[in-house]
Length: 234
Ligand code: SF4
Image (cartoon, rainbow, N blue to C red; front, top):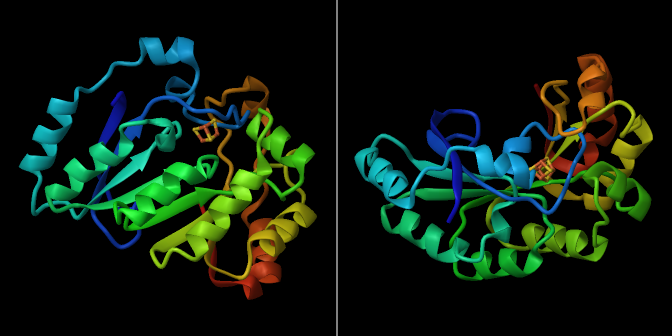
């Protein structure tokens, strides 16, 4: 398992829990607005200092009783073939596990859900379920059937979950967000995250001015009927 970073304590990444966040390297998307190029672009991954499995599990053993959970973030964690074993080792130490995913690997997701290896899933919804829009937001050609399958699987899994979208001027219009809500709703939780123009994969995005918070709050009101919880973050 290639670990490209570890945030030792977070109160925000795992709702209601004190957790650490582990960053796994590699991603099959190239979202132009991505903040984590060091975990995505192969040439940058090479330069990123790695944390060994031993270091990570020593850390988890030391923090037992102080942390509730571990957030697996990326990159895209489901690309790691040894993810189930890695999670099993984490759970054997008594931690809850939250997975952050782009939803492109429903096969791995199914395995993790079936084996009861994850306690919470956060899936990014990049755009409405239209090929052109999704491909543009993800920066690659996306198999939308897989994305849709992941959405349905998560909704029917019985485990806690959220969907979320980073909202970016030039990528999303108000109508796009409403369409996303219709595509994924009804569902439990959906968060609109405001874009931060900082160290993006495509440097042009660093010059984009985020939508004002009021814009996101207004769209939220329009779509909240599709969700039990619908909020603006950031
Ligand atoms: S934002 Fe996109 S490119 Fe960046 S890690 Fe997530 S899915 Fe990969």
